[in-house]
Length: 265
Image 1: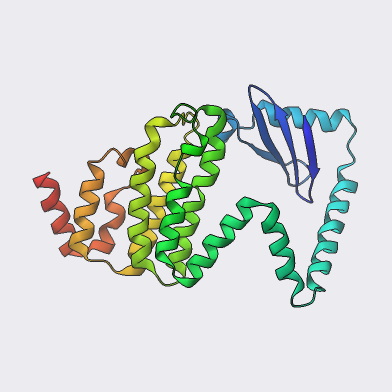
Image 2 (image 1 turned 135 degrees about the vertical axis):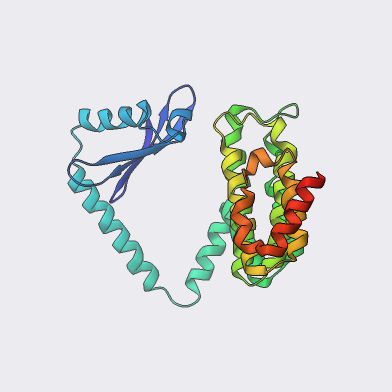
């Protein structure tokens, strides 16, 4: 076990099991304890043995949790006070400094900036990069050891699409969600997704598409056609889109078109 870190309501650490897993104990009331772990059993929502190992380690060390939680609150207040007391230009300089050292932070901020500008071409290019599994693959395949890193990167595509909807570009967001679903589905066979992480991302893209459709007010017949086409595609297993979730959006005209396309298919 390494990297034990204390917050006000949580304790995080890395625990070595079959792989190295990131665990987080969540501290509630006197009798409440919960937690998360990125091991397969933990990803199913269970309180796994890695969380138990962290708890037992803290007990063995006679951890003074009230004191550590108070120290965490003090650190948070100190950080907030420092940030609040900065001059106008200092936060910008700080972010630029952190971006120079952290590639992931830079990428997330670039996506937010592109969304704010409505730069659809820039966002589309970035989403393609995020969903490209190539950098994580060995011999054309993303094995279990690398799938979590790939999934964490790919999940940023969902946030980018939702941000574009929030910035008033829902029609573009809807189109990008469909493209992203197709790109994710195209690569799923070359990824060891034993934990179902790509399914979570697919569901997130489906939700982002649904949100964009509601905001955009799309062509109902075209939407019905896409839904039926998608339902018959391999990507349907990844997104688990329920056609009836769109019933109130499609209305009578759209549902009639959906039934027609389904019968033709």
